[in-house]
Each structure stands twice: as structure tokens, then as C-alpha cells.
Image (spheres, rainbow, N blue to C red):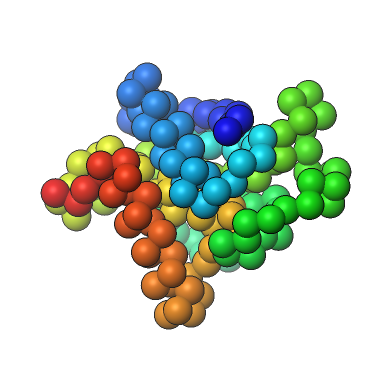
Length: 168
């Protein structure tokens, strides 16, 4: 699988190490592996603080509070969709790499730290969870109904287990 991941660190509250970047990459790759998404793809990860994600959340969702992760899918995929007609993605292909642009995932690194402490698990587990959650949104999953939520949670847990990112 060929995946291009661009990580933009737009915050200075939490240090971003090579291990952090590796965790992000491995989390994205594992979602695509488990979902059997084998096309060349591109994902942008934007790391922000609570103030910035609050502004974005307010602007795009009308919710004036900080959240942990926001996903902005480019494609209109259905959850679990396996077959894709590449010819329908002409406007969604990066001209330089030829990769299908899946979208952006914005993560509040402050929320990662806060929630890891609140839930009593590692920073890595929380970051992995939020990246996996965001990726599943880019691939068409949602949690608006109980059935959809259960399906998404099951996928999240399968990926986190495969990454050995347990809660405790």
C-alpha cells in the first residue's frame, strides 16, 4: 500500500517526536490495511491546541467548544466500501503524486493529553484512538445512529488491538 501522510504541527503545547509521528503513520496504515483500502492515498494530519480546534469546531460545526478530533473527508464513501472506481476521483487526486486525497484529520494535542489522563490510559493509546477514529470518518464511517456507532466502535477496537494500543 502506498500512503502519503503529511503532518502539520501547528501547536507548541505538546512535543511531537519521531515516535509520535510513527504512531500516527502506523495508525493510519493499519486502518487502511484492515479496511482493505489498497489504492494510493493521501491524508493530512493537522495537530493543533484547544484554542485552534475550538475555532474550527465553531466555524464548521457551530459548536463553540474545544473537541478532540475533527475529520474533513474529501470523498463520499460508504462505511466498509471495498470497491472504488478510480475514474470517479479525478478532482480528488493529488496532481503531483497521483494519490487519492482522503481528507484532513485535525487533532487537539492538548485534548489527547487531557483525555489520556482522564481515562487512565497512555498518551499513545489516546492519540492512536483519535487518529483511527478520524480515519474511519474519512472512509465513510459515522456514529449518528446506535448501529453505526457500534460498527465504528468495533472497527476502532480491532485496529487498536492490532496496534497493541490497549486501554490500560
